[in-house]
Length: 278
Image (cartoon, rainbow, N blue to C red; front, side, top):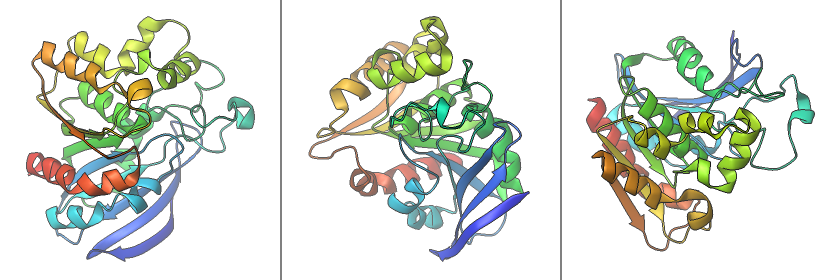
């Protein structure tokens, strides 16, 4: 059963928010959905948010619906972690970068996270079925984008599933999570101490291991407070250069990590995906 939590007219289409009981996470899961007014099956753009965010963050702050309406794209904004999971608050350490709001778009293998924190399987295996119950989605035409932790998720999922996602883009992604504090903390908790297991969730390691996609679009603010310690776009740049992957890495002077940055360049990203989803 899918519960509609809110629904409003938006740029000729509808922006809505929903919840369903996930068979994969074993918890209620929420997501946002923008459906344009265009008739017939529409291509789908998955928009993955970052640390501390919910299904509402990208939908409310990014300003993407106006441009998605122009191109006839369905936008899906999934929540960033399970909520009200079996482990309860005991499974969270009270910090913003682990547990609720910090699912890292992977399937955890370690206790107490493994039963519920199955974000990759939820997104890939269950959400398309849910989406078809609510919208005229053309699942033969899907693309993915994300911000920060969600940018990490978009990159890794696109690299591992190149036949599913026609294009990928990111704002300020965590490019080499195995090498930075955010990723080391999350991967250690969710995947354990074996760093070899981390490589399957690290864009740079995936590329080094032979995963390929044609091109990647990334916007990175040069006034981003997390740039040097957490994001490391130069690592992705080097990995793509070695692999022959076209990376459009646009370094934006004066922009930080927030949604004013995303609003400024979201039109470019929607147009990038729309062209490849046509």
